[in-house]
Image 1 (cartoon, rainbow over the protein chains, first blue to last red):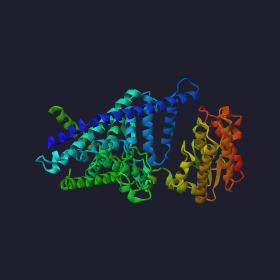
Image 2 (cartoon, each protein chain N blue to C red):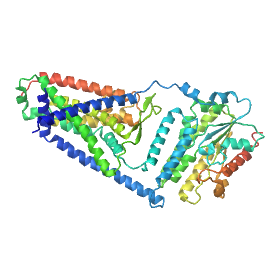
Image 3 (cartoon, chains in turn blue, yellow):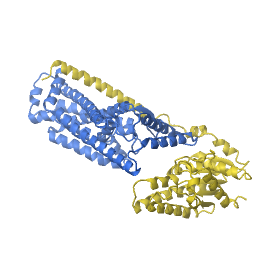
Image 4 (cartoon, helix red, strand yellow):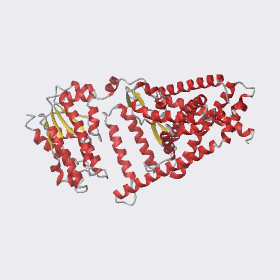
Length: 333
Length: 263
């Protein structure tokens, strides 16, 4: 079994997939980081030209903001749900003032989180597609499936070996994304921000976003949560791609199908609030990280638990279909 | 190509990573899982003075102060809020002061605040209401560094007027008899801002006044003229909120307007 997995992984390495993914990641993360830095610089220059000083004195502004927040906290009449988020806002501001960091300075931790938020629905699934799309159909196209089948190993073991190898590669790719974006952003911005306080833990109560249960985590913990969710999405995409790749035999068709569901699914999201069935399509549930960041339009009945349930059922169904089809398939190459 | 050691290293690393990711996923799940939904009644009970001011209205008429930091009396060195200053200046009238203002609040927020029980009870039990509302909306627009186009200004104004309409309608609905005093705005910036923005602020005031005059029990009190030549001594150290002198002037003007009604 181990040998089978090893064999599959070495195939992926030999096909230079990892290096392709690496290059794509470096290019895109580099561009994103450059863009962020550029926007930051131009904001700074805009502010300093407006205040007629040579540099922006943000501590005055931050202290003022802090005073207003404390004032608001003192009022006994603010709704209870608002208290927690005000407290976290205060902690954040105090952290910035204490460490002498301008609140709008881009940090490596925030960049890494933002990168996952932006790419979780499209870019990361496409990277996984590179890994998974020809896992089975590639063997058909090149005819190597015959060599594989002539071994005295049951078919399910072959597929299981492929699947485990795919899962491992997916895991490594997610780690690679996290490490690369942290490193590139860290060297670009020269500020890591791993201990910067961040708010998370929003709930949906009766269809509105409720912030009473908000908790504060460090930048590092936040990254960890977001990338754990990203990993979950990647695993589901890998499994679905594996199923398609077994069903259609040709790599190009497999890629086409996954791509069109990904893009078509994005359009389907416009109907989410009115058309309940759209909630059960896997693409509608890919944006898991939004549940942690709390930056989304709440939709009745959609929560992290719901999305996980939907994605898990897609995962199990794809595995079931993959194994039954692969075991019974006539191989005519 | 790779030695056995490297393979086993990759295996172990990826399996450990998978476990870590799974645990992270579970933690995320538990973070976002909704707790037992909070009961509205619990929230109301924990708030102070809710039941009380509902009970002790009969003794003295209740003066309710709603709005932003100006209603709270921020900038006043004596620490009095608008209602307290009014009551201490005119001692012959006895008032029970309820100040429910929220510093930094914008008009939009008040549409929601008024839906809460606390605010409804307070409006129902009050016989005079001071409102200072749109300062933060206007401040945001006027102090922004960019000049907006005419249509953008109009859009902001219309959405503000819609909110204000709802707020005034709600107050009338809760308590049609109460006297409402709506404070206008002064412009604390002098000549430091563009003419276009000052004109917009005037238009804002004018539209607000038109809306308020639709209700016979509501009165709009302009403050611009009061502050125009007194920015030095009527503004507090932050150059934005009124000083205690400024508040005194506001209170005197309010009293001059409503003195005949309350008799």
